[in-house]
Amino acid sequence: MNLEDLYRLLRNGHIEAQGIIDTVPDPLLVLDRNLCVRSASRAFFATFNVDRDETIGQHLYELGNGQWDIPELRRLLEEVIPRSTAVVDYEVEHDLPSIGRRTMLVSAHRLFHPDNNSRTLLLSIVDATERRQLEAEKDVLLGELRHRMKNLLGLVQAIARQTKASDRTGEEYRDAFLGRFNALVQAHNAAYSQEGEADLHEVLQRTLKPYSEGSLGVLVEPGQSVSLASKQIMPLSLIVHELATNAIYGALSTPSGQVRVRWEVEEASAPSVRLVWEESGGPSVTPPSSFGFGTQLIEFAVSRELAGRVELNDAPCGLVVEIVAPLGSVS
Image (cartoon, rainbow, N blue to C red):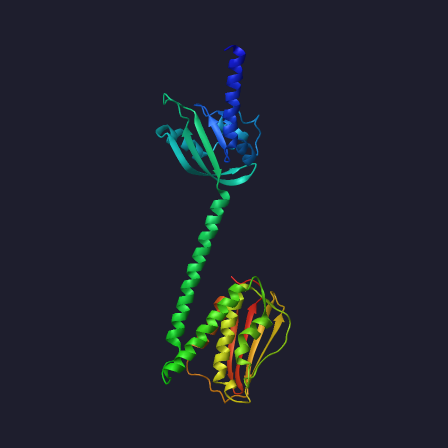
């Protein structure tokens, strides 16, 4: 074998080794014992937006005008690696001038050598920024789901405890409880099957449909188009159902009784909607001696869920309820 053959053999070996490095999909660096870059993969250049000329032969901490001089990475290479032959998925978070803040999983392995005295390092860098963001979003969603489930189960428990049982048969109690419970189910279905906003008139018509058939007189008057945020649909549906259920024992208990529902948009410092529930033609009304669960439910839903205010007036001609709530998203 002459020198030309030896050169050709070495060159082919180098090309093959570089081809293997470039085939690895994640960014990869080969560092010598002084942490200078001997080789880098195509993925490294593409991911971190750097050139080969400014990378090969440079000290790791000097790459990209010092953007790789990262305290966590220094600790890994200078303290952890000397005591271990490999470190896998060491998390490093840093602001890189060319691509912004990134979360990277760094794995370092000493290059295998038959005499086991290699000081060359293979440094694999996985950009886990999007993965970590998705994990954080998932944690937030799970936390919100647990919170909503806790509130929902608490509300069902409260409905069961507060639905009046005295002076009622088991069937009457069942119907009263299931009425409220079904309203809760329908409100959840409406809120979570609805993508984005919903029209106020459609929400009212859907919720009040069971009370508008036959001789029952619930009239939803046409009004200005109002878009409800998704978070407003469920509490408003619950409120309207509760009012309609109470009206069965009030205005809707007589043939001449009627409920009229209307609304208007108020333009003040911030747009809001004023919803009026007005009963008439029912039996004479006397103010209650105490607030029932229905009243507490309405007041809670308006103040906490709609960020609004409510007035309930037991007028001689029937109950009048006014709800004022801001339009748009509700926190």
